[in-house]
Image 1 (cartoon, rainbow, N blue to C red):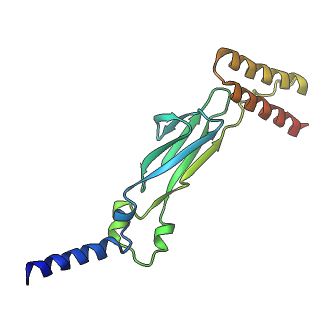
Image 2: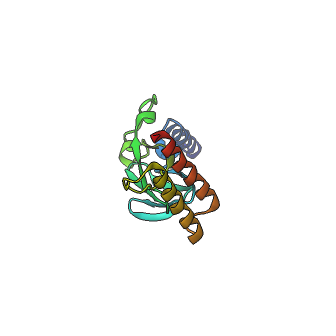
Image 3: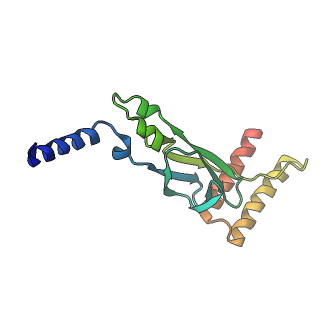
Length: 169
């Protein structure tokens, strides 16, 4: 066989192989995911390792489960999971076994995570509703004065406290 014909055959074979849906080539073994919180600025850990404050993007392996823990002063801690799923890959006409073995056949769901942090409300002291509401707002004011909350976070927290007490009325 002539060298040119051999080269052309190998090239055509490589192009055909790489464009037939092989996820290792088209998507890679890692996926960029987005983590957001309301309010923003929550300290975030992924599988116990601190990775920064929300919002942010991070590259994670497609074939693992990731637990995301969020914490912010004045708010209850929140958590969520990134889970691997093969649903989108399984719908393809052509699939390669190596994609499953290398994890490229999976996508992390959700690709964009948004966690709403709830206000950390104190346990009811048995006092009247107005006293409880006042105590919660005073606590939010104290966090603002200490510099542990921004003005925007303080407003968000107070709005949530007021909404909670309106629902319970």
